[in-house]
Figure 1: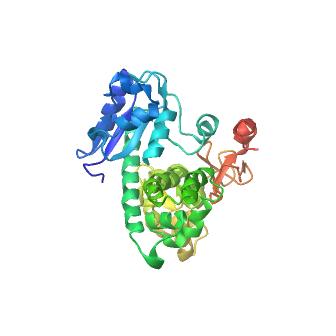
Figure 2: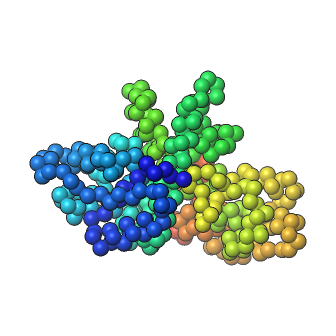
Length: 366
């Protein structure tokens, strides 16, 4: 739970939509939670400086104290006193303050193809399908980042051999699975965003600044990489595909999900609406029961059979993998893996062949 001293700051220059999204966010938050809509209060003479300097000064006001999350529209050109303002400037200020930021643009989605085509790496994007959905996601993000901040404070207080020495080791502590540090590290291997964030502090030995930025950095890494690309963790569809249980059967039947509930992910950004499972713990459940797949385990535990999980490209064959573009189950033969911008640890993440052939040249898939 976020404390009374944490604030979410909303940047939105459209008065009509701003009121709608502001009301939705307020309605989604607990009563002891603050939302502050950004409003300029500086004198006109202050705007002789770069926008990032004035915005940084404005965010130092008391009503913006202890910012947990910044939520910003991409187009802020109509912001009062900030003609031509863009999310790039807000993102820069957020990075300097060590504050996480999530972005949205009406009509845009959070699909990996849209992101790769229009947004780039290292950002958290909100689906704009409805204000209510965006608001629930804002709450999830804010609570997740605050939880990570608290976990890191405890981790950094450790001394001697108990204190983790790498980002992957810190992450393993955050998700309470220290034994998975090597698998977590695979998600950072080749991650240019991670390298770009860490390297300047490593060169300058600016430990204090690095500690301040660490919750934001690790939060992005967990939410936008480890939880997004199935391998270490799997979402509902990816779990159903991996277990070979029809997606609708797995996602809509609580009794079946309860068979695997011990493998549920319960760390930062966990949500009942979109649960995730530890893949290794799913394997452990199958191994302990001496079952070859999830269908066999359900039959053994509940005494009934369930349909297999078909590949979305050929429904006559089993899936087993997850297409991150279509968000559907897919088989090995009907998809491509080892995409350049997939984390190395995400070995269940694929792109279906038809999507790959159509969009590949435009998205750097090959």
